[in-house]
Length: 177
Image (cartoon, rainbow, N blue to C red; front, side, top):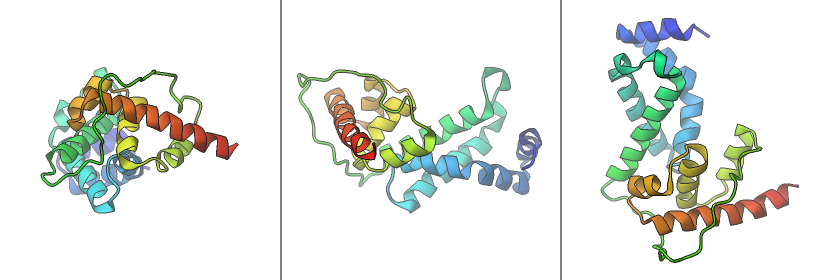
């Protein structure tokens, strides 16, 4: 694998080979990220491509003193996926609006003790809407309010999906023991 600094330098010079190397190097993890938001492979790849175009276009904005390149790129692609999700004009979310007074108790992160590959397997067993919310909350650290705004749903619905994910994951975890 080529040195990341060399690849980034080539990307800054707009060299297609360097851009392709960067894309291929991080494609698997970005695919896993976008699969949390979309079921259709075409939509997953579209989200990755939109995000990577923003990475290439805004590469000069990356500041190594503020953090790792991977984190910056991951955030850029995740935000592009959320934008795609939000901007789809015919998008239908399978969310049922939940009353604000429904009970929600924030417990510990059910993924805390798991390896990444295990998390991916368990998350794939959740319904798509619940998977989106859970991924943003548990894996990306978004607040309930931020998720509600990003997905254009009520905070009560976000809380319900988090509760639902814990209930479903408990059953899944018990079966795997």
